[in-house]
Length: 83
Image (cartoon, rainbow, N blue to C red; front, side, top):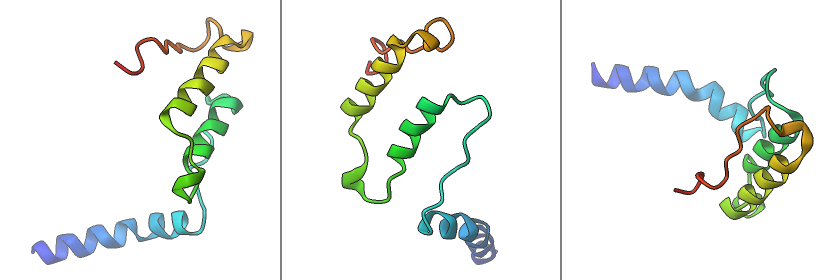
């Protein structure tokens, strides 16, 4: 029974693993602003060295927060992000 459960789970995730290995990433949600999605894509870089650090991401969020189109629309409270 356990072997069947493990086999079924492995089969279920095989398409996801194949998608990721081929460089695939999740599609951009309709409600997601382009600049935020670009940050997400940077985080999905295949090579670990190409991914931004948390400090880099925080800096990117702070820059987005300061843009007029994000003020009042999205809650980017970076002062509480690392607590």
